[in-house]
Image (cartoon, rainbow, N blue to C red; front, side, top):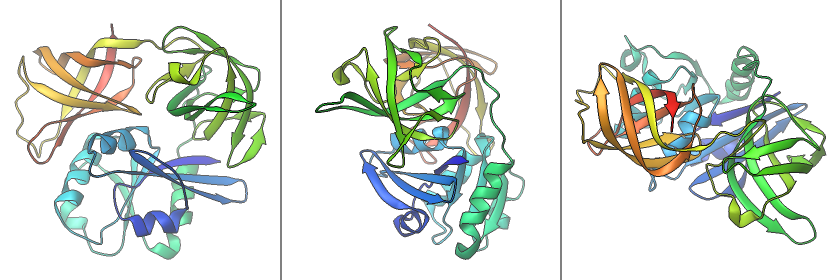
Length: 299
């Protein structure tokens, strides 16, 4: 069983959960317990867009309550917009802060945290998708191997020799795969994998791109169903500019139109997305994350 955990802050807690791995705007921490693997993602708080990415790509979120501050408040607002399992540490009591919010959560001590993460994952099941999908966070060249892609399996199962389609429409063949430094033949949902691919060069692949059983193209505009936090009095209007984060993708977004809870957004940077993907919207005022959106169409 594999699970991807978002850990918004508290480096010490991240290092308790797993061993530090790769690092860019997001730092990855890895822990293997028997056949179970936990990969914790921690955003670089100086690059706030990475917070949106971490919260949307993760299966569940672990939140440190060591400090009752603005950062904790922002994460609580974001969690109230996402249908994700959350685990709060028992450093401080926060039941009153969560009262009235639609957050599925539990409280765990450090001693019980790993088991709480695994138990929460067992209760999630899978998406049931027959289509495979990998959201990419990095690509590079390895001498003697060729193009290697790092990413997370967010749907279905990926197998060696599969043909997958990049967001650009180009196809690749999975030559080999590794997870946690071990060669594997297949990878299911929640697995962070490295795959050696045939058919594309590493400089053709960017963070946020998608490999899938069918092409998920990059969109220049999105129509999304908006859910705004009741804690934030933001009035979305035509012409407003926001940030939008969806898995490993981020862009500035102009509101072209909004009718009731359906917004059409023009993106500064094209993003790969498909119907049903959940994103978070960011504004300049605090709390910065003020709404979530479910993709209806992309163009």
